[in-house]
Image (cartoon, rainbow, N blue to C red; front, side):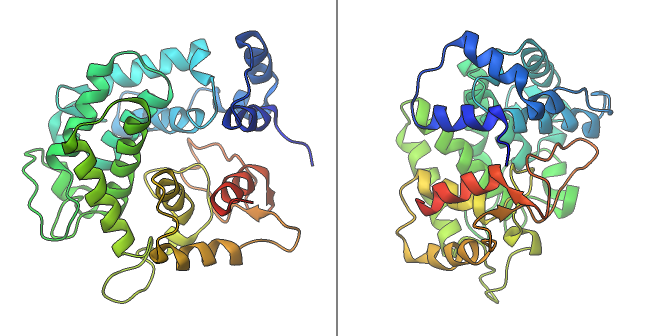
Amino acid sequence: MKIDPALTLKKDFDQGKNVSIKKVKKILNESELINKLLAEPKQKPRTFVGLRAYEWRLLELSEIPYTYTLNKVKRWLNMLIEKSYIKEGFSLTGDKDGLLSCHNSMITSILMKMNYDDKDLIDAGISWIIKYQSTSRGEECRWTGKNLFTKYGGCMKKTPCFYGVVKSMITLTEYKKRFDVSKEVQNKLNQGLEYILDHKVYKKLSTGEPIESSIIKNFYPYTYRSNIIEILSLLKANDLLDDERCNDAMDVLRQKRRDDGFWQADISYMKTAWVDFDTPQKPGQWISYVIKDILNE
């Protein structure tokens, strides 16, 4: 099975191998996946949905090392920032009413993974998480933007959106990798990770059933939705996989291994703007690499 050069580059990067920028650009240019990701989305970035299409592409591109060196990626990133940055964080509508927890977190993570050099903007996204992201049931959110409480059923009602908690903790973890963190940041991260572990990674507290059916579906990379692959990667980054509350989720991953030794993407989301790294229902090179990393194989 042919391996896309971008995956080889990611493996080399993860192993700490040095690759010259000249070679990087050659590899990225030869990657079929990269060329698909760099195709302009059909949607125009004048609306929430249109700007989100560019956010999705940048989110996917941020999974691949050195894509921030590409001119088109730089242009898209600057456009996303220009249209989404407000002084308190990031909103796809360009105002505080449209700021949603998951998108503020994802855009902040994109900036860090793309080596964006304006730390003040990154700190704005982080500050919003510290001030307003709920990490427990019944916690009142003081944010005054409207959509946080109404759009998509509400992100911060009596029970905070689980995906919002996950995405926020991923962002704080990315921040901790790169910068010295305050006690306030560490405390929020600890609270969020404990909230996730209390749910045994993916389960409702009330019934023990999956929080959503999609949370146990295999897909990679990740949109505003999350799944056990992303959540276990987050917990591994924080040295928490030995916690017994991870065991059930780890078993779910092991049970999903195909007879040929690979894992597969079960589903594809956001098809109008999303580019699949692996063909769903087929042996997946990318998703298998990520899962094997979680399982230390």
